[in-house]
Amino acid sequence: MRITGFRTLTTVQEWGRPVGDANGVFADGVVPISIVLVDTDEGITGVGLGPHVEIERIFAAIEGEDPRAVTTLYDRMLRHTFKAGHAGPVFGTIGALDTALWDIKAQAAGEPLWRLLGGRDRRVNAYASGLDIGLTDDELVAAYEVYASHGLRAAKLKGGLDIERDRHRLGLVRDVLTEAGHGRRAGLMLDVNEAWTRKQAVRHVGEIERSLDLIWIEEPVRRWDAEGHAAVSRGVRASVATGENLTGLEQYRPLIAAGAVDVVQMAAVWGVTHFLRVSALAHAHDLPVSPIGNSPVGLLHAATSVPNHLTSELQDVHRPVGVSIDLHVEDGAFILGDSPGLGVRVDEELIRAANRRPQAQTADTPNVRPELAGRWLLAGVDGIVAGHPVPVVSLNSHNEVAPTGR
Image 1 (cartoon, rainbow, N blue to C red):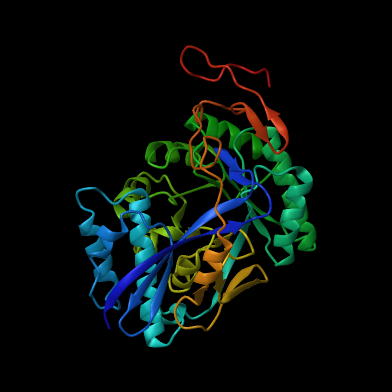
Image 2: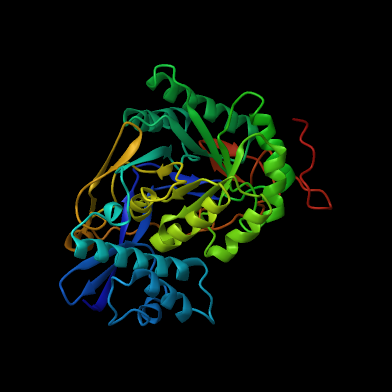
């Protein structure tokens, strides 16, 4: 079997409501989803969900090769990006191709990927993650009632702009999940997407922990700040979760060495091989792992085969336009199917006919870091969060947040 070519598509996830985080919001709820399809001379096509930046240069590393040699080809792709580096969307392109190769390998074997990788149980624990910072209270409750109806009893909220607002919203979701679980304690997490300084993180989480118990605080400071994450971990009761934006084992080593991460995360777009390698590194330090992403199907399959998987992120319960996946959610878990490979099918004609395109990226979307990020404490920059005006905070001569009297 040989790799003969690739195709790329872009579809969308239609949330039907605003989605975003402390850095910004997609007001129309339409989020782009990139797809890479890898073809072989035996008619098997693999699917990878992820970017296709510099794909022609990276694909040269695997063209004409046997796709079943996945891990070797992964390292070949890394070598092909040696001079330019493999960070960011380039690493995502490698991950998308890598996931497509694992899909091909499992299809060729006639097995679902979870079985090929050595998984015994097709059930993967899940938590709800609504990308919900732009929702009103009523919208927030309605969104998490849907998650609760699928048996989820743990939730991660987006926040970081206001202590009282975060405490209130966490309480609302706790009540929804507790009621659905007939009094069973709900698990709560808070994700601030690198919005804070170290001091802000400890103060903000400490205030919330006066009345609520958090499983983890996610990305409290910048992704590379090992010392900062360690300081936060020492200063709060919650675990510190981070890693979704790290691209390569070398970026995890400083955080693990500093005791800066309690829950090791990996983004779905970085690929299956990356997940397996980071999981082994984390396991060597007795740390649990947790996949991140809107459609983390490749990592869900891989999660069944590692001993330290904790829980996986469930964002939208619906699929991207033109994409079907052989899995479902029940009793608080992803249940993987028996289709060979990933179980992902792509309707290329439907995607092209739908011709859905997300809004142009602007400065108020989640992909652009706000100018004052890391310099606010109780409020953010001018704008609207969940229907509430967000005032500008004043800074002193040292770029510190001035006292607000709260």
